[in-house]
Amino acid sequence: MGLEFLARVRTTSMIAVAFAAIFVVTYVSPAWAGAFVLGALWSLLNLVALEKIVVGLTTPRQDSAAMLRRAGGGAALLFALLAVGAVLLSRLDPVALLVGFGVPFAIIILKALSLVLVSSAFWRRLTAPSGRTLGMLAACVLLVWAARPLIARAQEGGHGAGTETHPSGSGVTELPTFITLIENGLGADHPVSHFLHTWENVIFSLLVAAILIVVTGLALRRPTTGVPGRFQNAVEMVMEQLHDFFVGILGPTHGPRYVPYLGTLFLYIIMMNLFGLIPFMKSATSSLNITAALGLTTFAYVQFEGIRNLGIVGYLDHLAGNPRSVIQWGMVPLMLPIHVLGELAKPISLSCRLFGNIFGEDMLLVAFMGLGVSILAFTHLPFGIPLHWPLFIGLALLSSTLQALIFSVLSSIYFLLMLPHEHEAEAHH
Image (cartoon, rainbow, N blue to C red; front, side, top):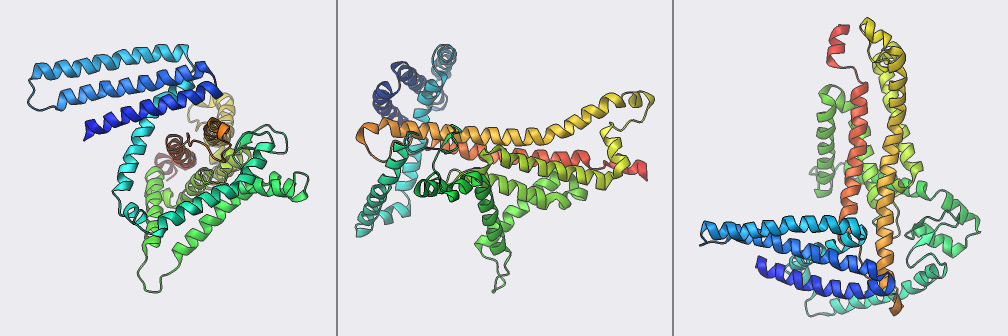
């Protein structure tokens, strides 16, 4: 079954790459198409090499010499492909190569998901002989037809298919949101449009905050039966995991005090990061203003806790590097400015890291969605090939989670560095 699956993947990949290469040659460039095809062939040959290694090591009733010979041939092919890949990356467009390289893996994921879907009870109910399937197909067709004027209006603006550019002329192209639709309906010169455009990121950040408040409010309600439901259990499990995680970093003495802030910070950031993956929504963390506000909030809270726990004298002693000897006191004029600059750099690094990753992630999705629409531009259809799905959507989910985790973990470490250590407490006693 596994070898048959890989054979079908290879066949489907070659067909998909052939059709995609035709569109890329027509709408991008022959050089980009050549690099795309070579990347796909490179990926398929890597899969063949891995298949040889696995089959050589797992085939029963095979003498050790034949097994090692077959596995060694696959390993030699794999190392040769690594050298070939290095040459290709140095001479051809790396983006085109990586896109072609990802085609077979995307097909593997799609085929695996289709096998799971076809064998599920949901699919059997959906495809049962009834009018339900025809009704869903008719609803999808009507939805696409209704969206045609909206997409045509976006294309008339010269901003590219399915993308919008802010009326401020900033030149930043992004996916349309429901605020963009309102602006298009009212006109760029309408006062409401100016207000929505100015406060767009704040609106989406407040919307995420409102969702968090509603969800936690519903979870904290006492059930009338005295037995919590699945929703409340799920929320409590998330809270418990966050509590254990941050207490494990800060310790049981100081950890519980900062868990509410750090847990809320993690949930708030991850929800804002993922909000941009919802159609007509936007990741507010793709704006430097929002991430800078989060970084400054953490910075102010850390400094306040340092002064509160250490006192003014202890806080200044901490910034001076805790000098205790003559040499250390002599280094204070050097160490104090370094520590002050280090504290000031923390909110900058927090905000710029989060902003850069989420903004880049959004631009990558926009680029591949625009390419998917452009490939089918000759058909004048209001949709395109979903090149961003599932590979780049999966990467966006992973990146969004990692960035929220990094921001909250670094914030907890900044609290830990500012808190009095055990040996300092013992010295005071």
